[in-house]
Image (cartoon, rainbow, N blue to C red):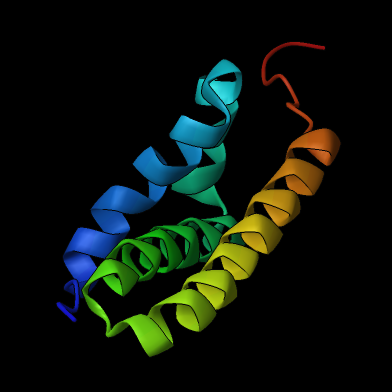
Length: 96
C-alpha cells in the first residue's frame, strides 16, 4: 500500500470532511484552522479514507476484512465530526 505523507494528509483532511458536510463549509474551515483536536480528526479521516481506498490492492482474502475495518473507522470519525458540528458555536467579536 502507498502511504501518504503527513503534509498530504493534512492538506486532504479538510477536503475529506467537506465532502461529508458541504453545508457546513465555513464552520469546518474555522474549526480546522483554530481547533487542534478537530484538525487531528480531519487528518485521521483523510488517512482512514486513503487506507480504505488502498484495500483494493490487497489480496482477496484480506481485502474484505480490512475494507470493513477501515469503513467502520471512517463511519466513526464522520459520526464524531457530526457530533462536534452539533455543538459548534460562533461567538461574534465586536462591540457589546
